[in-house]
Image (cartoon, rainbow, N blue to C red; front, side, top):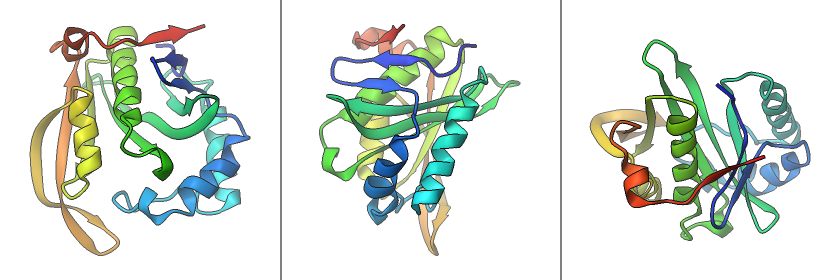
Length: 191
């Protein structure tokens, strides 16, 4: 396994985080409640916490199973995407993403997710990639489906965020179904 490498899509560059990302993550993600409304956690809540989170990402790049990208459009970071909790026995990993509010509705999350799914399965040899979202989070649901992930099940009342309960939608993508390659999405690894 290689870990986090740069990935290029038609409109985006997925790159490793740098310390300079911390300020933007605090301003555009940590201070905007809509960015963490459905997850209930905010790793960028303060400037110090944002810097510590990015520093942890940078230190984790030494590991071959750490996957964490900044999503960049025209030289500006607009989001993050990462894969976490690798299960060696099942050869599966979970993916999560976030796009700043100013860039919502433009298909960037699905484009980045397709690139990561392809990389994890075709190049890293991970058999199954999972994700979840709250049933009320229509944008994330659409993103997961547009990227080729399939709904596996619904856990009624399976997600509690700040005292509110949501149905939890569980998704998966497997390299054996070939969804990405059949749709002919363009993604390539960069240097």
